[in-house]
Length: 476
Image 1 (cartoon, helix red, strand yellow):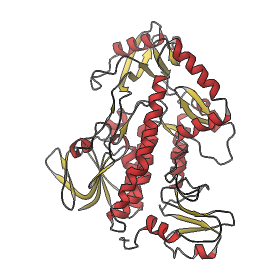
Image 2 (cartoon, rainbow, N blue to C red):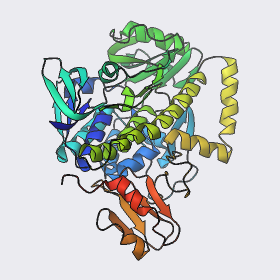
Image 3 (cartoon, rainbow, N blue to C red):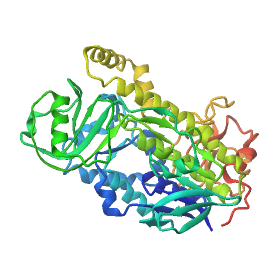
Image 4 (cartoon, one colour):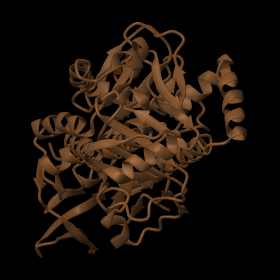
């Protein structure tokens, strides 16, 4: 029997699989699509923001992402300018979020096609020994007393101690498990297409045009629109040149002609969140747990952070090194983060509606973003760097991301301290970094601080160690 089955081999499922492997578990990834299909679906660019970049640096993955992004500079118009010398940190409803100053060595964001991210994560995960089975469609999930069974379209089944749905917003895992998915219906239709225009220079990017949004991607030939028409009727009907041409014309207020269309997709601001991220032996991550408008580029990052949070916890539990109650902290920590992202993406969609009142509101917000404290707030919110998993902790560092640029490619926790009494408490169970600076802290495998103390007092460290490394009875 498998330790964990992951349904869905997108970026979230792949990162989770690698994290589980680092934690000592043996995951199996079941993905319905093959590589060619997945590449064809990779319309648009995917942003990897500040906190996710920091998390991926922990695993030594940012170099590969940086190299892949550099390869795009030769073919993607304006991408280097868009990154603004590593100062760009995304946008809020099209209003740019730029750091005033960037510290030397700081990890910025990445802008890549999804299939490129998947290629990098696949190489990393398979290098760790992760098994990935493509062409495997899961049509049902059955929980048993001591296992969970994934039923495949061909009638076969795979069993595991736990199963994680990383199978997108229309998640079969979530639906078959019966987890509620409340939220709000779509109010707009977005379209992204590889399209050629008769007069390419006639259309300019505008995040707030007379009829909606028109955006020319840094990838040549790719254009996107957004209209507030109540949402797409059927997202699965193939996008045509005529439909894209009409959408560009309505959103821009210009007469345009699409001479060729090489595929495209629709999206919306359908916004929902699973009532819980865990039910028994089944868990959810990524779009299976939450969907929202892609405006602001936070969806992928939210899912990747789910994977980082869940991976080490589920790895310990699957091996019997930690109680099942540890899995309850996944929903407790990640659900509020998801709620905040859903809130700010709803706000961003509202700020992109056409009309003079919204235009005035955007001008006021643009002025507000020049206030240093306001800019810091929006930068932190949009990049997930304001997350605090333990707001009531006695030490302000606990629950926050580690303050030092540490690397943990093996997925182990790290104890940073100068006191021999504190360093001696770990007995080789975590990696140690000796330093004269204060405070001392214990970093969880996902980069967040589980324990901190100013001074040499190790009080509470033993309990924190039990949390992050388990009972020590796990398989090697």
